[in-house]
Picture 1: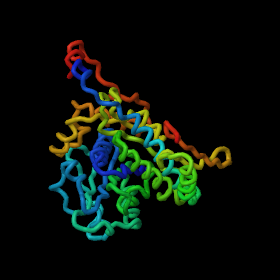
Picture 2: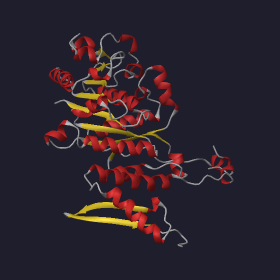
Picture 3: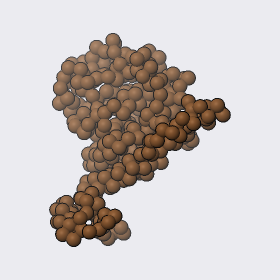
Picture 4: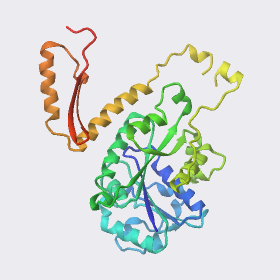
Length: 270
Length: 85
C-alpha cells in the first residue's frame, strides 16, 4: 500500500521543505521506500535541502511531459538506501503540472513498490498547492505559533476538506495532522508565544510534532543535510518523534517545556 | 527569567493572539461552511441602528450562525463601551 502525505501550510517560510525532507528521511531510515516530491514549480528548493542539487538532470515536469522516464528523474539519496527525490522544474511555469500527469506519476510510484510519497507543497493556495494535496491520504499542516500562519493553515484545512480527491469522491477525509515549528518553550512560558495547546484548540487538530526553534535548522540547510540526520539536535529528535507518530506509535511530546535552570542561571538570567 | 528581566516589562501577548484567532477563524469557517450571505449586511445595518443610541466600535459587534443538533442559532453580541453615552 502506498500512502500519500502532503506537507502544506498556506503561508510561506514556515518550514514545509525542511519538514518534507526530514519526514522523508525519517521514514526511509525506518526502512520504508519513500519518494519525496517538490511541487513548487519555478522555485525548486527541496533539492538544496536534500543536498542533491547538482545531481538534478530531469525533473517532475519532464516526467509529466514524457521527456524522460520516471526512473531517470528519480534521484537516489546517497545516505539512505530507500529514499528518492523528484525535483521541481526550475524553468517552466506552474501550469506545466496537470492532475492527470500527477496521477500517472503516483500510479507508477505505487507500482514500483513505494510505500510513502511525500509531497512538498508550495506556499499559497494556487495550482501547485492544490495538486500537491489533491491525491493525499494525509496532510501534515506545518504551522508557526503566530497569527498569520495559524489563520492561513485554517484556510488550507478548508481546502483539504473540499478540494481533494477524497472529498470530491466522498471517500473519507484526508487525515490532518498539526506540526508546529519554530516553537520556543521559553517564550511560551513568558506568555509571548501561543502554546501547543492554544494552536491545537483553535485549529482542532491532533499534534503530530512540535519542533523547537533552533540554529540547527539553518546549519542543516547550509550543509544540504536534512536536519533529522543531525543526531545531536533536539530538532532531529522532534522530527523522529513525528515520524513515529505518523507510523501510529504513541510518543509523548518533548521540547515543549522550558528546560529547568540552575540556581545561578535563575538569578542572572541566561 | 533572570533578575534583570523583572525590570524589563513586556506584556504577555499570546492570549491576545489566541483570542483574535479564535474569532477570525470561527468567522472564516462559518463563511466557508455556507453561512447565509446576508450576514455582513445584517451586521452593518444592525451596527448603524445601535449607533443611533450607543457609540460602539465596529469590532465590538459579532455575528455568527452556529449549528447545534440540527438547529441554527443566530448569535449576535455587542460589547458596549465602558462608559455608554
